[in-house]
Image (cartoon, rainbow, N blue to C red; front, side, top):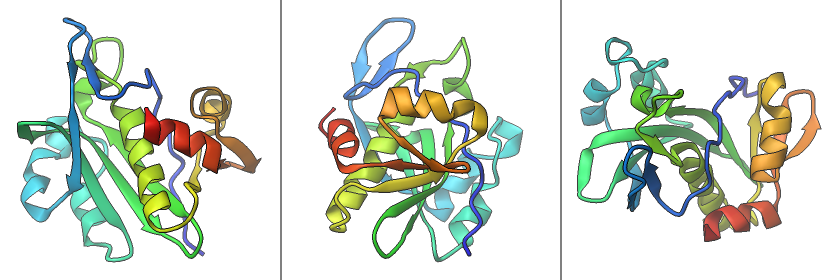
Length: 169
């Protein structure tokens, strides 16, 4: 069985881009594959919590980065997915250190990455179904902000309707 990490990302705001918390300006984003070249930007020394180089080495997982259009060298967040037989599994999700907490630079990073997982699910013919394993304290948060269902234990499921809303946003 695939052992998943308990995810604890917070959805601060659902936006159709990312929004600068100081100016209020919105910036369009790109999601692309995270590569070995990118790993020097996301180290524990730079405040990232996880070793994304190890995640990238796992061939069963796909790792993506969220960047702002025309600024591809600054990673705003990362997402690790596994394509299962009938859904997408979000293994790991992390916003950049400067996009976490009260003094974050951009809002909407987490929501954009979850929406991307939903988009991948639709592209694979899985009707938007995305599963993830949540920390107990965030189960209600995901139900309210994402429209996720608590499937049992720590498992959460994003159904087709909720996934479509996220992709459309």
